[in-house]
Length: 140
Image 1: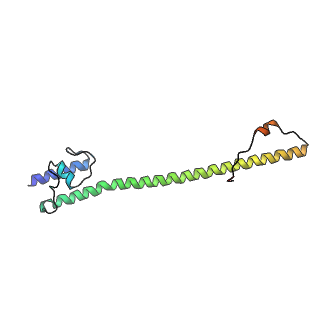
Image 2 (image 1 turned 90 degrees about the vertical axis):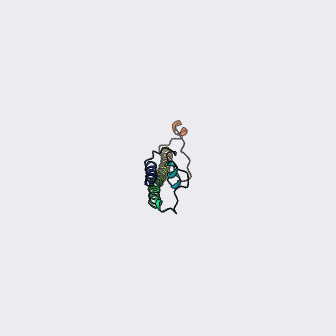
């Protein structure tokens, strides 16, 4: 009987290593997959049989340890996504400030040109200034 239990433990070890022989790689570790990997039918590992208590405990532990790295990866992903959102908002705020400063610069240039024309008595606007128009942004 201990040979059969050893086969179950060997099947569990193969599933933990990710190198199963009879089931597909990456399957969830539970009583049924261990029994299938050991070459038995589903449901052969039963809680009611005292011989399987150690095996069932090992299967539960293996299942928990296998699910932990996935949770850690999800936590890292959530943290990285939050950081991406933070940097995107900072970038958009910086762009908005730059656009506002450019708009203010255009307005100052236009005022300066009109003051210069008033001081020098010029009545003709240079063609270069007429072609250049300030960008319109109502957020500034």
